Image (cartoon, rainbow, N blue to C red; front, side, top):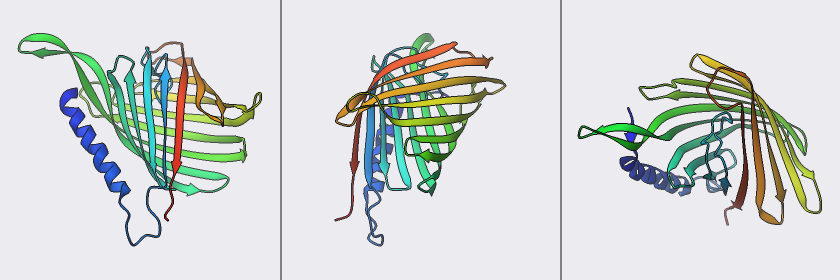
Amino acid sequence: MFIPIKPLLPFLAIFCLLTFSAIGQENPTTPAPFIKHFNGTVTATNNGISLIPSFSLGRPAVFFDLSVGGERLSFDPMFRFGMNGKPWSFIFWWRYKVIKDKKFTFSAGAHPAFIFTEKDVIVDGKTEKMLVAQRFIAMELAPNYRISPKTTIGLYFLKGHGLNPIPPNNTNFISFNTVFNDLPLINDFRIRINPQFYYLKVDEKDGTYVTSSFAITNKKFPISIQSIFNQKIKSDIAGEELVWNVSLVYSFANKYQKQ
């Protein structure tokens, strides 16, 4: 069933407060605190693009992506809003690095998510527009292999399930990706390139796509420029042939240790 947004916001606020409070408590029997990092990005973009790049908001958006946790376990909430202030999606990731090596890493994660859309709702016999939330749960698997300090290859698998009376019910996403990181441009500027080829299946429809993101960074400056291009190869899933955006990204990172 659909959930109206107003009763949902207090629940989300309490959920976040309890989560941050719980992970911030130190167990006296352990040698170090759980929280060892608190990182995040704030992104302003002309077109909000989802974790699955073929899905987009189709208008300007702002993203708040956070990560708090230790070396293996982390809580990574993601909040997406339209520039008009209306929420698009809230995703509450829990991720765990099952294997953490210099060359090979394997992580697994799961989340509940809320996707907000405007729907026609009958109130006192009248049809009104109301912002409602669709509920989803999902899990991910992400093995990655580091070929060199600047090159990584990996697979990413995401399986989602809708908890709503209307589709989509099941989503499967698998991608092969490569990351070319910290490539020199001029002076202190660097570029990161992340091409992907992926297969997407939503209920009975499926398709193949190619996408790539580009980010220009400067280690002396916390703001970077990022762009994403997503091209449909062959697909019967509804969506545009080409999805793209340009974004400004503010990044921050903090590390903690026991004194």
